[in-house]
Length: 378
Image (cartoon, rainbow, N blue to C red; front, side, top):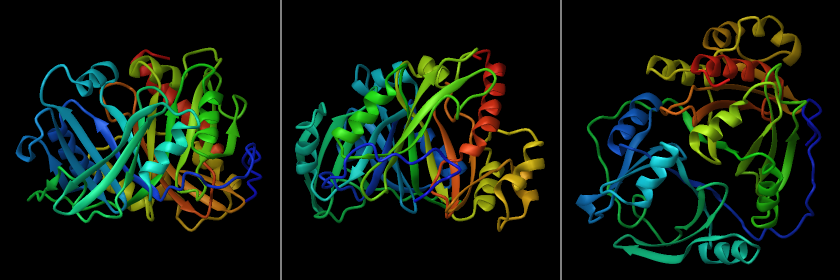
């Protein structure tokens, strides 16, 4: 793979046996203040479908979780039912946000052993959970901030989601909007911590570094950040890691760290096969997006060349375009979906491109700065 429009792809870590084979993202779990209302929002606005539930009716006394699905994406929304829980403390500190990035593996016990012996801090020893549909094995390790990775082994399970959950059939079934799978998930970490977590994913989880961006690549007149993209062996898991860089004003990463009160997942990028239809549906359902200046579209075709789509609907929706040697991509970013200016979503359609939209960084971050200025946090 040769991305001449991106910084050179760096194989900075030696090739080795994939000691942590990962089949894909199993689910993403958010700790939220009101899981029932959050589930309604993600169904209504993002087109997710009801899948599973756990709570008082299933014998769980301390929390309530709603599981939503759209194609290969599973979203779990969890709230505490009583005071004084770790879930409540997480929400009190961070606001609503991602707690668990669960990874689907063939052997959760081996995944735990391989990562902890390489220095990962244990979050959950391997445990077997059973019900009438079979059994799953799960284990877990800590990553940046209060975020954790749970390894899920489900080859001997045929239930709707996990043991302890029951099927959730709702009369309210808004139509899906074409979201397919999680393309990548971005973590924001503190000053000088990016390389620490790059090393963690390389040493502890066997990931390799795909791309590196420094403050010359990702900067505006006011703010800057640095980023490195880590990927597992089969490329199904991609974790860009951001840290702040020195600038004249407070960067988006600094703002996130201030309001999230630590490192955490900044955004989840979800893929679609028709970004115009998906973004139109999202906008019609009330989702708000960052907008770049209209002049962006005056020169974008000179930069990216011929594309399959008409430019006018892309311009009308505010969708960005970028190209690398393998094709092009279309992308757009929501405004934060929580009260704090923290987590948001990216909608992405890849037409061959393997990159992350470097050509859009300046316009995108200037749009973010306009939002920060409105919030008084720039």
